[in-house]
Amino acid sequence: ASPSPEGVYLHTNAKRTLQETSIPGFIRIVERGWTDHFPFYRLECEEDMNFDPGYEPDWAVISTVKKDREHWAFSLPLSELYSLRRARFSLGRNFMVLTSRGGHPLPPLHFHRGGTRELLKALHHYIVLDQSPVDGRLFLAYPRDSSSEAFPQTFDKLQILDDGSDIVARFIHDPYATTFGGFSKVTNFFRAALRPPDAPVRQAAHGPGLPAQPDDEPGFELITCGVELGPRPDVTRGQPLDKWEEFLDSEGRVTDPEKVKELVFRGGITPSLRKEVWKFLLGFYPWKSTSKEREDILRVKTDEYFRMKVQWKSVSEEQEMRNTLLRGYRSLIERDVNRTDRNNTFFSGNDNPGLTLLHDVLMTYCMYNFDLGYVQGMSDLLSPILFVTQNEVESFWCLTGFMELVHHNFEESQEAMKEQLLQLSILLKALDPELCDFLDSQDSGSLCFCFRWLLIWFKREFSFEDILTLWEVLWSQLPCSNFHLLIACSILESQRGELIGSDHDFNTILKHINELTMKLDLQSVLRDAEAIYLQLVCCKDLPRKVKQVLGLCEPSSSEEATPDSQSSETEHLLCQAEGGAASSHVPTYP
Image (cartoon, rainbow, N blue to C red; front, side, top):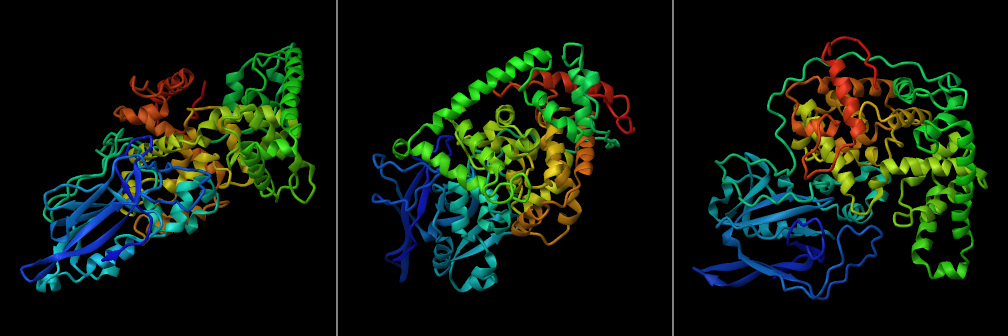
């Protein structure tokens, strides 16, 4: 027998809830007698009923396996093995799918602790695996006999799978920590991340003469069918908002909030006004509130903040020892505070009061939203707000407003992050099918390298000062609520010349994108992102899925609703833009 290392998982289905879908076990190649003077080998997989996962995941994407399920096992003669396919679905998983000569696929297998290479080397002793000329993911199995000389590829040249199990396990069980740790270290095995959760594994193997079928992508339209987008207009940026009093009436109300938002979108805010305007953009103050009403709001919110702060400050050490969740939140916050923006003078050095404020606001947020608590990355969202407001209470309530926009990014299901990556893929396929085809050919079509971009709104990609401008532009919610996806498209398109036609593979693409940090010109990215938006909204044959991402049409009843305000803004813009998309006219966003 030729056993593989521990950690083989049999994936029984692709339900959204991952309960009882990942069954641990072991796989062997076993000699089972002789036939016609030749040994008869079978590939056998059995469930491990005494499984010990060997880790305590703090971000468990794979649920703990229950022991009261039915027994799972399979056995297949190697002579009946027709093909082996690399397949992918769901977040952070790569699978090996075996298909019999009868066309029946076996349940997908994944080696969470490594072992794929050992299994394939063992198989290579008994059969020949030859890569299909029409499908790079498909490897056809042939008996190993004298005709095997016709297959020149060695096992090492096939490069069917590369384990990289440590980094894969890290991403599966803690995607945020792995993301912040730097994507440049991610190995080949990560290439299959972020497959749509309901995507089935392809079940029919292709013969050498049959065309390959594309990966199933539920929820996608075919948008590479030659839609003419038309010319991309020239866009100019404006000057920062530098006057505030002229927008206030005698009682302190903002007379034209939409004009303010338009100016913020067009050029940002001058630093001296950020402290005041951000409180409106993030919902701390209503746009129509008077100066007197804002004084009352501040007094009430101050009291509310300190009541919540007292809740965690008054917990004794003995109490905290019996509160695992609170203790865990505190540990994560203390760790992240000590490494958040330490190059900024507001947070640099030891015993810095800025660090104390950062810690206290995040701990109080755990009291405010205990269900979500603290997830790595939230300190990145707070630090610019605290830097601008220089006030504990105001920074807290501005953070809650920001989290209203992005809290779903940090939810344990990760469905929102997967959905945003799918939406980004939809946009990119409409904009640049050639770039998408190249990324797909290098197993990078999932755009997993954009995970950090979307999670914390490019916080690690631009300088601290640029982030202040970028975030206030995004907080304007113009021209649509998914403008951050268009920014990602702008960055990716700016790199197409470096990527297409190069010898980049999955690893080097990941490394190249990761190394763009602090090398991007924000104003150029913003101009291109807005130009992309105008180019798309002026296309009369734009696929419905693209329109939905941009808020140009209502989703179907089975999909999430698009905010009404977003639809009205984009509809107004579309009417303006129809007159001349190729001109340098700068539209006014309502």
